[in-house]
Image 1 (cartoon, rainbow, N blue to C red):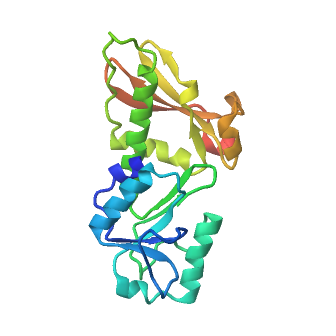
Image 2 (image 1 turned 120 degrees about the vertical axis):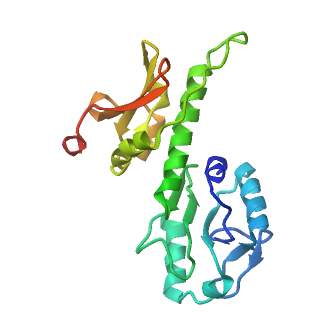
Image 3 (image 1 turned 180 degrees about the vertical axis):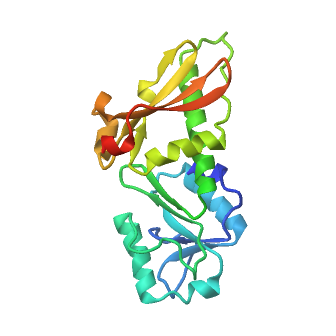
Amino acid sequence: MVDFQQTLKKIPNNILLLNTEKGIGEYETHTGFRIVRDRENVRRFLEEAGRSEIKYKWVDFENLELLRQLTPVEISELLYIAHAHTHLHSPFYYKLQNNYIYLTLSDGMNKVYYRYLDQFYNLLGKSIREALESKINEKRNFFQKSKVIEKLPLETIKEIVPYLKEGVLLSLKHVTIEENCYCIPIYLLEDRLRAINTNGFSGKDLVGMICYNQDTGSWTVEEKLPLLSSI
């Protein structure tokens, strides 16, 4: 949740907690959920949640009066999202005016719905850059200067997005280095989430590479297998 919070352009006004117990926020009688009201309280909650082991699930909302106009069907849809981790209809509600739904899954992964994709692009670019920077500096000795990775341009991030629609794994375990160029393989994942912690990926799953040239500070995306023929 820390990375997510750092990419927020502004803290949500209020959040509706979909799975928390007593002691956090306040009870809202109409929905039966607990809520955290006001931006400063939300900011504090997000900071504490980032350090917590609790698997929080929440959705932001703009106005308490409109929240109390949610129908029983809409409330049941929110409960379904919290339990099934997927949506029946649009995950963005007129009465909530929500920009996000944040779900922490049982396996420790996070699933986030974004109303505005540009915010997701920011998080994706930041995560890739920081992960690669950490990877290439992990074996440096005390006297070596840390290598700094340049930001991913928005155009490059958008080249990656078509791969994400099919479900992919960006594997830092299999980064290749050639002539000061670092390449992160993109493996077709689809529904094989359990394979992430194994070596269950091979060349036939490789659909592309995200490459960074240390000399020029430039990023490129290389297609290895057309997506349509790899599915």
